[in-house]
Length: 525
Image (cartoon, rainbow, N blue to C red; front, side, top):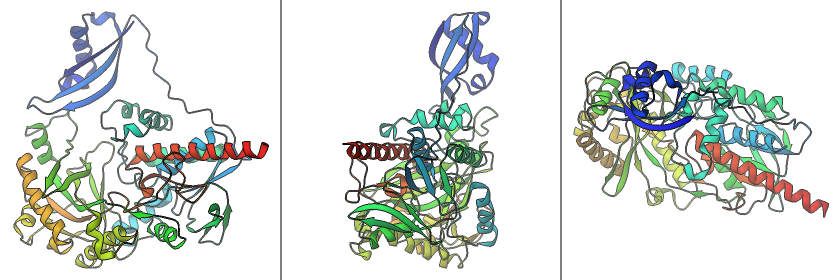
C-alpha cells in the first residue's frame, strides 16, 4: 500500500534517512520495519519562525516495492524529410518549440546568432577578463539563451500558462536531477545546465532537425502579409511559410528590423535598477534568524516587494551563494545580472533590486515602440561612461548610497571585470534614484540587517524583461497581421524565465503545427 503524508520536520531530519523514516513511523503509526520506502514528493523551507522547519510531502510504501518513475523522453520520430518550420533563437522557447515540432512530425530548422554552449565560454571569458563584448556570443546570446550561463532558475509563477511539470520532467529526461521535481524553488545551476542544453541539441539533430549557429537573421521575407522566409548576415536565404520568432529580450536588432518592415510592435513597461551583493552570512542570519545556518540548511534566498510613492520596487533573480556577471550585448554599455552554481556555495548573495517603470517614463523618446528600449540603452551607456568606458561597473556601498556619500573604499565583489566607486545617482533618472533611496530604507525595516555598508550596489540591472511586445492573436498566437509569424517567449513579451519561455515555445509550436495541418486539409479539399 502507498500512503501520502504532509508534515514539518527539522532540517537535519529532512536530510538524514534514518531520522526521516523514524519521523514517518511516528506520524503514520507504521513500524519502521513495515516501511519499504519513503519518497519525497515536495519540499520547501518554512523560516517564518526562529525554529526553521522543512515542509515535506511524502509517499510512504508499506510492504510494497517502490519503483522510481522513469522520466523517459517522448518517442521522437525522424523528421528529416518532413515539412520545415523556421525557429529563430535557440533559447528555452526555441529549443522546446523544436522538440514539440519533432514530436508532431514537423522538421525544426533553428537559426541561432550565437555559438554552441561550449564555444560560448571563450567569449564569456573575454568579456569578464578583457572587457571584450561579442555582439553575437555573450551571456544573453548563444545556445540555451540567457538562462544557460545566468543561473538556471526554474521557479515560475506562470502555472496558468501551461504544464510546468511537463517541462521539468523533460529536463530530467535530458539529464537534470530529480530534485527539480521536488524543491519548491527548483534550480539547476550554471555549471550543470550547459550539458543539459547540449543533450537537447543532440536529440534535435538525431531526429532530423537542424541547428545553424553563428547565423544572424537580417531580414524577414514577406509576401502578401505572409512570411516566406528569412535572410542572414552570411547572405543565406531560408524558405518557410511558418516562423517561430524566439530571439530573447535583448535582440534589439530584431526589434528594429520588425519596425523597419512595418511589422507591428509596441513598447511595454519593464523594471530597472541595481544588483546588490551581500555577504551570504548576513542574508542567512536575517532569514534564518541565527548566526550560523549549519550544514542542513541551504544558503538562504530572499524575496521582497514594496510600494514606494506608488511604484513597485522589488527583488529580482535573487542568487544565494552566487556571482554577479557582465551581461552587455554591445560595446559601449554596461549590464549586470547574477547566477549561482548548483551548490550555491559562493560566499556572497546577490539580487536585482528594481523599480517598476511606466510608459510615461519613456516620453523623452516619443511614441516610438522602441521608446522603452532607448530608455534602457541610455542608462546602460551612462553606466559605461561613469565606469570608465570598460565593463567595470559603477558601485557604491548601500548605506553610502542612501546617505548620498561616495564610498571611499569598496570591498572585493564577485563581479570579475571590477567595480568603480561612483555616485550611482548619476546613472539613473532622478525618479529611479529617489525610489531606490526610499525603498532601501523600507527594505531595512522589513529585513533587519539588510541596510548595511557591507552590501555593495552594482549599476545597472536593466534586462529584467523585454522593453517591447510583439502583438499576437490570443487564439492562434500568430502575429496580429503577418500570417505564419509566431512571436514567442521573453523577447516577444510573453514569458519571464526558463520554464515560462519553454511553455510558450511549446504553445507556439502547437499553434504552428495546427496551421500546417489546416493548410494540408485545404490542399486536399
